[in-house]
Image (cartoon, rainbow, N blue to C red; front, side, top):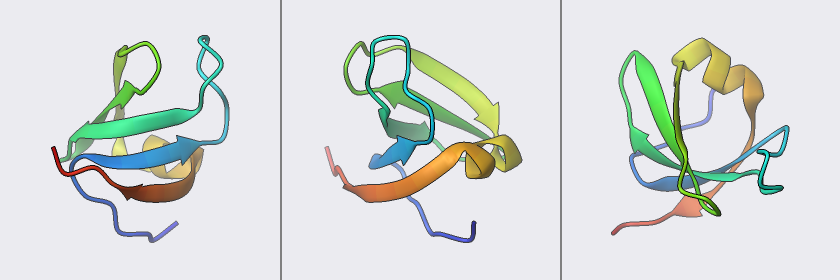
Length: 64
């Protein structure tokens, strides 16, 4: 998936988190990507290839 995503963008993942939401905010970009759950504020880090496999769509920017 060759979509362009930026820092603080809201993304939707294929599988929901344990708190039953699948919306995440990107908090760090690089070789690894760190995302934060919108509902419960848990943060996870995964490599870029794994992130792109699990990404469903980019919802929009959240410029805080």
